[in-house]
Length: 399
Ligand SMILES: Cc1cc2nc3c(=O)[nH]c(=O)nc-3n(C[C@H](O)[C@H](O)[C@H](O)COP(=O)(O)OP(=O)(O)OC[C@H]3O[C@@H](n4cnc5c(N)ncnc54)[C@H](O)[C@@H]3O)c2cc1C
Image: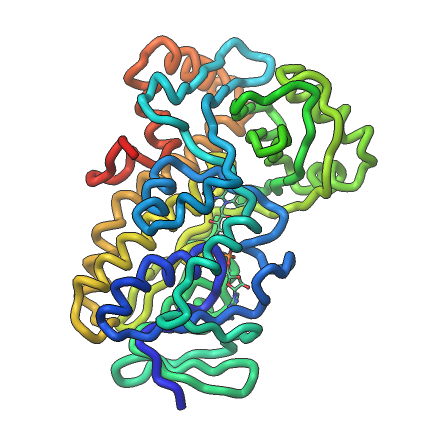
């Protein structure tokens, strides 16, 4: 039977990033790391690397820079120079500007498939090995680690098991780890859009009574649309023909980028806030979407998970020779507690405040957006949260 130091269950954005963050230190310590993933690299059905794009925060750029991967990712990353936040049918609007915040970009938009390719190619095969396609079907705590049972009828043991198998983690449930599950009763429709005019690095966040929408700049003057609507309505928008879809989108988004010309394949994601009630146990960490799944409108989910990844890697590499002791894992959890609470709270509050049609809340957010523009420190605070720089006491603002 194989014995590994670390087994990472799920080779999505988070699992692969953890392997990358650990590999140099792991090599020095003589650790072996195993990534287990049901879908082969490049498979468009793999949840992390489907047709979506992600808005990577400036803080995420800094982490990949430290890992020596940013130079590669950057080749197909579109910088966000400005974020235009507006409320349909109301006065309030504000513009966050990279120059004003003293950073080269507020964030970057990257296609998930490209990010996946960069991550896999960055892995050092001397330290990180793959079991793919393979799926962990069950796991069991044993003395000093975990035993994992795979769907290819093999079994392996590890000192530390990292559960990075996504928001609907079946293994989390099997281990009796409870979650707080708050459905938003909304789905996100995603699609790539070609606008009539150059986007010029502008991202748009637009709040409407039917739900928020984001249009993010991509390479080749395309835009990534994330449009949140009530479940049935999102289904309808996914099914109508392209011409009618573009007409509805145009009516809600307006003509800030001219006439919208083309829409690519549309995909739907039902949305919930899911928070795991436990993130560490002896020899076990729950990470990424398995630990917390957020509403995508504020673009914070993966960015937060990457900060978790960095903190976990640092804690493990500063910990005992054999990974998995509870003291080290609790120290990691303690370090990320505030960041997680603030980021989850920020995402949830923005979603609720801006997704509501109640007159008082709507008036409040109108005032809020105007207030942001009139009060530069408040705007800077908002920008820092959005850039993933505001929630960690040890965060830095410069590249
Ligand atoms: C519409 C949308 C837009 C988003 N936009 C942004 C954004 O702009 N910025 C941002 O920061 N975040 C964004 N997010 C959030 C981001 O996508 C997630 O945070 C991220 O995908 C989480 O990655 P993960 O690796 O934890 O989970 P997943 O992506 O779900 O990956 C889990 C992996 O585990 C594998 N797996 C599952 N079960 C098993 C098993 N039993 N054994 C082995 N492997 C298994 C799966 O195949 C998969 O590869 C968005 C989310 C949505 C829905």
